[in-house]
Image: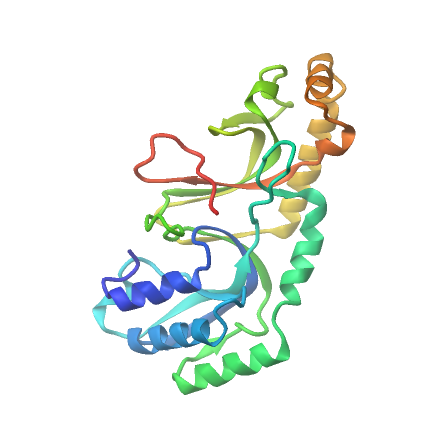
Length: 266
């Protein structure tokens, strides 16, 4: 819980779209502002366009506004970046490498002139000071907040890159060099870690260039492994082609009461 005020907690969750994960948006600062004005603004932004895929995500520590005083917080005006993409053949969630630049461009184009005007108008109406929220740097950031539907906050939010496969296929060949196997009930993912956000931190900025480099390194590792006999036999048995070797980005959540790690946000 980020606030003992149920109404503020609810407003924060509604603006966090699908909960913990990787987001992309304009980074800025809100405040100093009190809990009442922050809550009113967050609710007004959602109510104006409930299906607009851009949320205001304050990077708050637990109980920050419970002291009744004004506070300023870092924030992101953005959208979830890694959505679940289901491959009909392998049912592996993630974002493939080739989607990265297209996805970033589409998020940047999401905010229209009318949305900017509405943001300024609502901020003025609620006495909310904002710096950089409309013209700040575009940022990739991991957020560790209550997950959608579960109402729990994960201890860790990890950004991984690798390649997924069905468990029966992964048994036929070891992971590519430098990767470890992350096992979920429905799939196995050979992956390496790009970044990890741990409690008690709320957010972690992720360098987009570092993500690109990690994907390139994963691509080289996967392509190299595909030249080995066990991996080629696995590909033949699974019906894979070279087009199925593109690495993906994944989000891994570690829930506080889950003995099993690896729940994917949805």
